[in-house]
Image 1 (cartoon, each protein chain N blue to C red):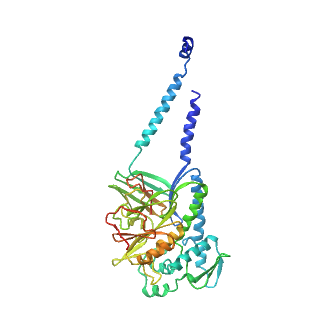
Image 2 (image 1 turned 60 degrees about the vertical axis):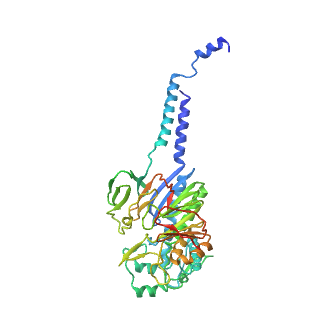
Image 3 (image 1 turned 135 degrees about the horizontal axis):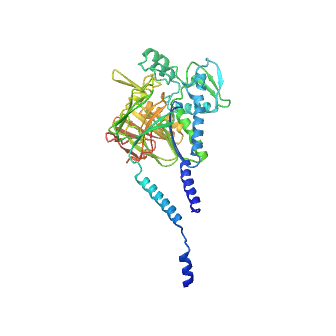
Length: 330
Length: 129
């Protein structure tokens, strides 16, 4: 019988090892969104802990609903004043500026004052049709040149009145950081930060059905890259049958209205992918190929009943919702 | 083999009764584990997380109503899940029409609530964007 004690012990230890080698974690209300971790390999629990700590650190930099955050302080600066920011802030500002410049402001992180008028700001309590005159006047002031960043000293200066909102890019940036954490520890799996997903191994990612006409719109297989989606179903309201959603045009201050329901971008840099999903949503189908190709990304664009793929146009996308068909781009 | 040696082997018990019993128990446990893996709860489940803790895990196939004290009410009906009467200020979570596929979620940020469908579906989805 004595022989079996060690055998049993080994069995128990092996089983508990399996337990320690994977971590599935789901939570909401962190970094203004939800987090889903499905990790495999030794160190999964350590990775989870470090991911949560990193999100807390980034929240203190980028959260608009945190009155002590760096971005809140930057937005409160008087015109002409400067302050030192974290390197993360300086870096994200530069990435945002790159996408802003190339897309002619289709991605614009300075539209917060206009979003406030519509009630689309993260701290807004009610949404309403904004006053036309107010929007038209205000939108002209929403430019990234309102701020100047000295990246060598991480100093930001408010040149003219304006506010920053990294809501369209910060989740992607955070995903990049979480990716580095799990890679350094050496675990594999999927990180889903508010629909911004990083998959270390081949994974099937379903794209949300914008009008809930099927379980999913379709499925794309990705590996060692990120995917981010912007949809018109995220923050919206309806007034007199006008569908108003939170992707606001920098040109006139009104929600985009070009027939696009959602844009999913596959990109090795999750911050750029996150920003591009908004940029293409606002810029429209005509600019989609150029923008996606320039950043080495692939965009899956859904319009009413059609799916169009830009960038790497040969990427395979399995349509699940039979009311949609693939649009062939000629 | 000589007759004498044969006798010796026959008389000495290589395996004791206790050991046979223990082996049998282990064998049954192993078979049980394999059977469990093969027939483990398949189909879809509704997982309810509050502030990162799994509070409920309900089969989507059974119609039920769960009241989450101070948060709202979950309805599972005909394979579809909805969240109503939310106590949150924005009610974005209630606008989601019923979720039914693996990986789909209803999220209520103010209440730190995630309702998520788990389990293998024929589409083999790992995550939803």
